[in-house]
Length: 564
Image (tube, rainbow, N blue to C red; front, top):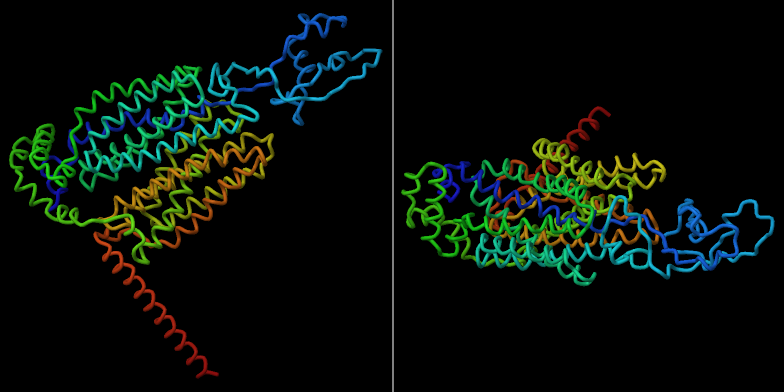
């Protein structure tokens, strides 16, 4: 008997499991808001060079400066780009007032030499009252700093996955989760009061680190109290937390148009989550594997009482608990490292393919959802539309996983997503709606591939290194998400270059998925030896099929020779 059998005895998917899942999922809404916050806090408003006081310059003309409209003044000071929009980064060295005088009889020799903005920029504040871009002038030559701040956040997520993942194995899931809530509350609030761009990046790094600790430990605490038969259902519902967070972010950002107040609104609630997290019980499985048997018994009995099965809880003793988890305790004593992921050829092949898949899924997904402003729609509407695409794509993906299998679904989703993203390149610039529709479809398929890789990875690795493999995959995903803002910077050299990267890499990764073994309806391996046996059996079956095929071919040849 295993620990999962014990969970069935104390209620299985009972009231406690539902309350625990809800309590752990709600903070995930705001954690998702932090991940995509820069769609709004770092949005780039329309802007142009600030126009200096030129009253004396125009004193000899027949009109006064105050009588000119803003559009006329702009025409005299700011050159037009090829699309007839005012330049964002240049202004005339000398005002071109002759451009305003259509009937001027005297030809004035003018010098239309331009220069870089010398006095800062003026921003259109109709959609965004204040962003980090308008506050610290992250435009023109400083534009890469806007994307760099998101890379810094994702770097924090990567550091959190490595550091806090190990700390949770040593000090417990709930303890690390609790202090991750507190860290995000403090660092997020501090971000809102950042006096400089450098301070902003430092605090955002800490936000990313805390967000990783929250996500990793919330999932562990949720799943380790849920029976196997119910994990797919609860896991699917939990995956909607990120989608709900995107919708929530659009609503909050629409109501709060300044980035500092927006940052505060999604950070302060984590002080409340920090207090509530003390109610969450520690994982009994972790307590047993770390020799805290008495605490594990108390937590299990508490769960039994909440599930209205106090008598079943009283039956649980240290001896009973040890009997249920004897195998897991024995496996836990065996030391495994990251080297085991590549120690044998079979696992080496799996690890390399999964590394490509994790990185490309994250790169493609964040590359699309973090660049909504280029589609020309309202940012708030675009955020909602892209978030809603997750719902149908997730249901379709789960259906295909069970019908076509993991391998075909994983590879197919990535290839289709990459193809759709590449198709955007061939859509004319004036067809923004079609570009948006294609980007939505690409995001949906990319998100579905992201969901698949979580399931697929857990089924490919044996139990003894499954958590290690998942951690390695998560690390590769963070590298992909860190790379996405860097790739977006390439549009400074060629506007379609990011789309080419976000399209080709998922297609390449999709084909690599076909090199992995199918895991649909295949028993999960427990040891590395099990993986070797499974792969060797498949190889033997393939050899037998080839022999049978050769035998049939020989028969056909002999029959044809007989009649000839």
